[in-house]
Length: 272
Image (cartoon, rainbow, N blue to C red):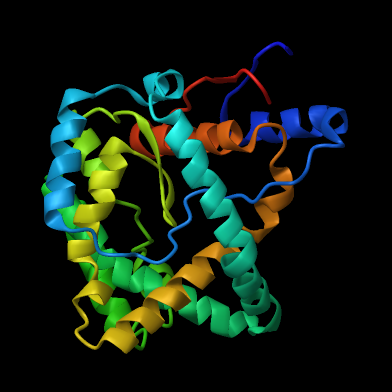
């Protein structure tokens, strides 16, 4: 077995890929599912509470989650299902969308969903007692929803210096000291942890799209959002080498560690 490979952050990862890729020339390319939003299916609150109770019993750091993977067998089966679904449905849709949609239209679609996301972001700011940031994020939403024509144009950023902020309930739980818990791969949604799975469930409550009563309209918006998000990661597909499950797990946990703590956890792969 090869020596474990350790890297910190995207720059180190890219360098490692360039220096080792020739050793894996025969390795089939796998589909990247990093942070794939996919269809934001509503999670029942009783399921969310069950995850939360389980989370409290299994709190651990993001780094520990790389070593503690008690559900690896199930995770790998789910990961395989997600990859197959992506190849069959999500990637073809995203590729067609990316190739045939004008750039200005794609920008408008992305701005629209980012604008709706600012509601959820502002709510999590409040839950973290970050009142100044919450005022900025709700102000950004107000400006872009009006002057920006329902969010199709990002006016708040360049005109008022109210730039896009990233928050979610998983980060809110981390802010209050809740550990990540074990690594999980969720059907369709993709990489997660026990904490982030609960966060995803709660965030749907603050998502304006989920509050739309007209089912076909809501599903159309969710499908468009999923396609747009998947198109973001088309360029990453060829970067997956070695054990795809370990690769994606390492990238996800590192990205979450950076998003929460502003630093990268050292991730070691037994088979890269």
